[in-house]
Image 1 (tube, one colour):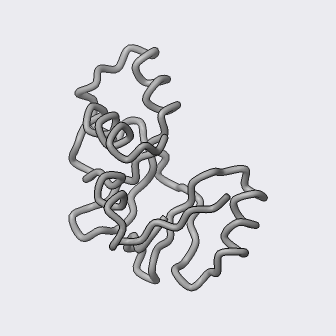
Image 2 (cartoon, rainbow, N blue to C red):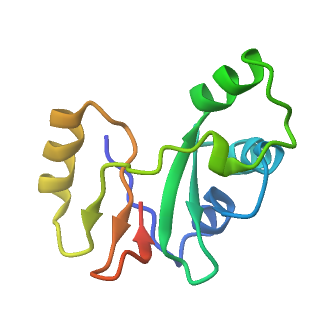
Length: 114
């Protein structure tokens, strides 16, 4: 099943985390959204990366603290789609890439949906 989350969805706000935040904020975001991934954006809303619950676990197991910057643990080159890709194509890309979460961005890289 595929779920589309856009800026009007209340989950959208809880899943996004600013680039200047720490791992603790990512954990809080995941708890609040119910998703296993946080989307990292800059102040202009441009996608910077993703942090998964696995990234957090590996960081903490590796000795980093929850106060560590998200930039230390995020995937800075996530698979993305543009906002004109339809639902079926998005699902195919997700299946081919073996991902369960894919951000949608506009031509400038600004996050538009998930």
